[in-house]
Image (cartoon, rainbow, N blue to C red; front, side):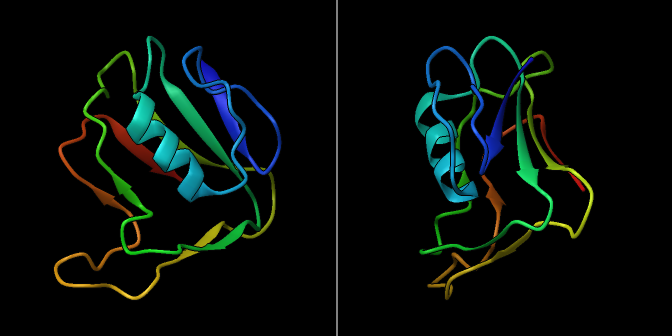
Length: 109
């Protein structure tokens, strides 16, 4: 299982070896590239704070999650829980994180 971390450097998977400074950037890469052959664990630093720039920044649409290729968002380290604030919602898009058609997505604190 390979990992990606914010804001520190780490590898996500072979198709997208990037590091992500924001949760929004990680979600965008996940949607563009999928999970890959192994599960992906996004380690979000304790105390991380972020405001999404648009109502769709937290929209997870990849359909590549499976029992063997899970999508996991996890707090990393001791301290305050990460905090994500949404931008102003528009129309039916009024969520901080939305999961559309995805399987095996987990968020742990």
